[in-house]
Length: 312
Image (cartoon, rainbow, N blue to C red; front, top):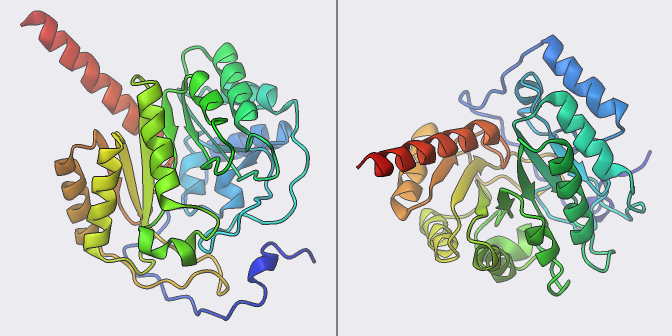
């Protein structure tokens, strides 16, 4: 049997703490869930919902909302928190942009979220492929807003600019954790490189919303979380997601603790006070969880604000 995480095989065993009562996935069984699944399978697509073992898959797929995972399901990084398989990836599928765009059309998505594995084996880190997916998606779905969740394109020069030039509506790159935990949690990444990517995106195109996500429960403290918020706002990041780290296996980074609902509410209020336009903070919050609904609310608020200004 193929090992999903060969780099973790000899790691010490970290027992998984029992989940508290407030962390419960919504179990829905509907024809919409199976419709979503059939469309994804029909076009031979991958989703982060499946590959990362997302706890929200049943709820989201029942709403026809799936987060597409492009460039294969094998990642070249070895992040200690992630359940996506690691190893040597396969060559890119040239038909993937067309297949993604077609699936989005069949699902009738108003807001599409597209992410990828890290592809350090590619000269541009997969930036051109991201651009092709965005372009084809917009061609087939001109009314659909597009959100991308990208890798950091570390040591790939200015290749990330290809993604920005394709003009997604939202450019998301997750900071994931506090800088003091990067060596243990995200050894293949660099905290300030991720900040710089987000900062440069906003510099290049002010009309693109930028977004980032943070996990809690890895061993960080409140002051460190607030410092990350400040760093993200300094980079002019617009949206922030905060979710509970759920340890995938006994070989992954150990869970330090579960945050309670009051703590998530407190972090949300702090983030809002910092000036983020949208903040999602809850145990099951993930990068794309309710992303379509949140973006719709933002657009509605902006339209109302514009109308109010024109009347006055």
